[in-house]
Amino acid sequence: MAGSGCAWGAEPPRFLEAFGRLWQVQSRLGSGSSASVYRVRCCGTPGSPPGALKQFLPPGTTGAAASAAEYGFRKERAALEQLQGHRNIVTLYGVFTIHFSPNVPSRCLLLELLDVSVSELLVYSSHQGCSMWMIQHCARDVLEALAFLHHEGYVHADLKPRNILWSAENECFKLIDFGLSFKEGNQDVKYIQTDGYRAPEAELQNCLAQAGLQSDTECTSAVDLWSLGIILLEMFSGMKLKHTVRSQEWKVTYTTALL
Image 1 (cartoon, rainbow, N blue to C red):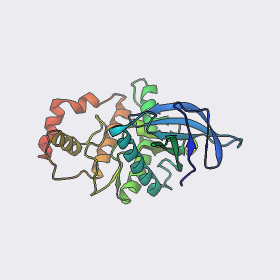
Image 2: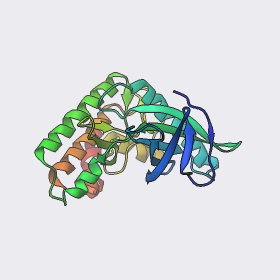
Image 3: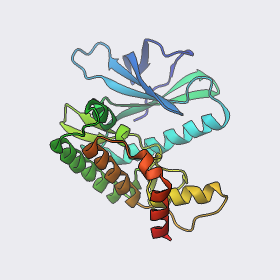
C-alpha cells in the first residue's frame, strides 16, 4: 500500500503526485489536532471518483505534537490495513509520505470520499430528530461494523456522530477515524473517546489518570456500544446530550454503579 514520496511546500499545492498519478487537491474538508483532510481527484481519468486525503503532521509541527501525529498515523494505518474489506468501514486506497524538509515528513492516507456525517444530519434535522428509517439504518450498519471490528480484536474508542458517514454510492453508513483504536487487552492510550460519548469506565479511567493513579482495568469493546447508544438517542431526540452526560448527577449515578 506504500506510495512514492513527493514534495510539498508550506501550503497544500493544487496538484501532487502519488502512486504514479497526478492528483488535484480541490478543497479542505476539515482539520483536527494532528491531521487535515482534503478532497482530491485523480487527473487524467475521466469519471474517476474523488478521494479523501488525510494528511498528518501539518507544516511547522515539532516536538510532542509531531510525535503524537506520527503515533496517530501508525495506529490508524495499522487498524485500517487489517480491517479492510467490510462494507461499513471506510476504504483505504493507499499510504504515502510528503517531505516538507529532510527531517519533517508528513504522513498521508488516501481514503474513499464519503458524503455526509451523522453530525451534519443532526444539524439538518433542525433539532427535530432523524427519521426512524435513518436511525434503524444507522444502528444496523454501525452494529455490523462493530461486530466485525470487535471480532478482529479492535476497539474503535472514538465513536461519535462526526465519525459515522453516509456513503451514497454504497447506500450505507461507514466508520472512519481509527486514530484512537486499540487491540482489546492492549490499551496503549488512556485518554480515549470524545467528551459526551465517553463510557463510564473510560471516564473513570481518565479521572484516575489525571489524579496520577493507575487503573487496574482496561476498557473493552463495550465502550463502543455505550457511544453508539448515545448517538442513537441524539438521532432520535434531535438534541445533543453532552451536557446531560457531563452533569454531576449523571456522573455520580454511573460512577456509583461502577464501584
